[in-house]
Length: 417
Ligand code: DOR
Ligand code: ZN
Ligand code: ZN
Image 1 (cartoon, rainbow, N blue to C red):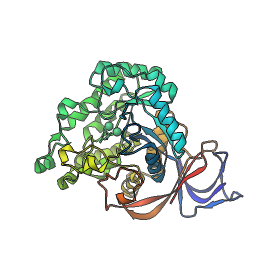
Image 2: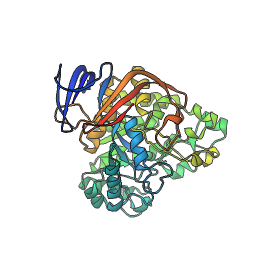
Image 3: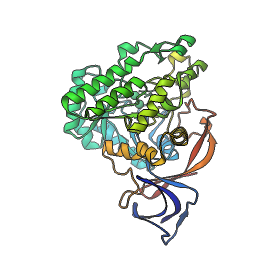
Image 4: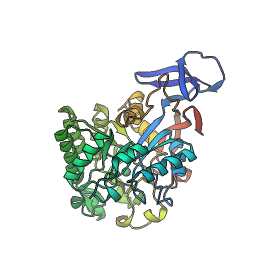
């Protein structure tokens, strides 16, 4: 099969080329290749997007999402691989749940789904989970996402165990005593709305803790969903002195500010919270200078019943898989902050490198995981069009550019417009 006449996003630039797909792999990239295929004139081929931070909710919270609906949302959003967080019920803290997720994803057969194991049993913060057994069953990382590990000692042990098994710790950074029930960013709009705020230091303290642990132990660490300007600065300084730290952020942190909470729309409630313009700008700078390696969705689908309640009681989270590429492309590439190959690195090559996954680049011999987009298609975000069960988005009505037209996984068409 030949993908013809497309703009192909390679690591060093965008080139008009044809791609030959054979046995699920990219067999040849060249000019005027002969054979049957599809004409992609006017379309752009990106390396299959990889989202290293999603919540698929299965097992246990299938009312919010399940592996089938989450996988459909993933391929519609252009993602060929996703890594799912362990805050399921039961918690993904053992090889049985890890195997279950892999098995279910295989039956669904849309995108590649990589489970992330919990750091502690039941995410209770006390005893380390069976990290080696989870790795053997297919876990690609460990994380306590949804919260931080309270004890620095247990976190240090986890980093050591994870490193022994060749896994990274992905750290949700939040000092719960300092958050103290806060639901939004502490600032002008928290005061205006009367909603309880939490200060940047609630996030930054744990970012600093994880960096210092990684530095003392000479081990790697990955910081999840960075939302503060001060967190960006901590990571930048740590990288400059050689700490093995990598980091991610999400589209809502570089497209929105806390002004959006003044509507009391619970779809703006997310953890960490949406912060101020100076944070938003610092996050874009962090993406530009390489401080922030990845863009992830933190896809956190919720049922309407979890969101259609007063702000303080609503669940935290944004359904992100179906809007991430367009928001990122529109804000960052059309906005002039990143080139298209740089965006592809944040959404494909870097997550692959950090987790040691196959894929991430369009090269001969690589799996034919392809995200084919129409960059000139302008559309309006409407959760009624989401295939995710989670309709919780703060972006309703927003106009964006960039529509996913085809998603191929191992050379097989898994989504077309
Ligand atoms: O907003 C969030 N939602 N942040 C988290 O850390 C967890 C996530 C969820 O699982 O809903
Ligand atoms: Zn988190
Ligand atoms: Zn998360």
